[in-house]
Image: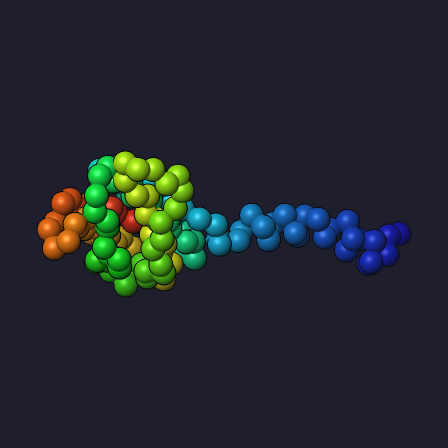
Length: 123
């Protein structure tokens, strides 16, 4: 009859895999080319939205978010760095279930150049 220790040792890899599969701390994200998109994320996931623009101007940070289920973390410029325009990545934490609209405004000086509205569904 196997000992409890040997049973536990055989069961340990299965428990570890189950823990990894159920861990929601992965990342959901989309890359936006100036068009509005929808992304679905699980509660606890980080959401990353990447916006790229052709020409001058930048997207304002923080963007407007319609629901407290999505909390703004940070915005940064990310590669590839091109002379044609900047890539900006916006990171959000999911703090509840539901739907949030993220309203991005691309501005140059005080002039509005473009807007993008992305929908985030948190389940």
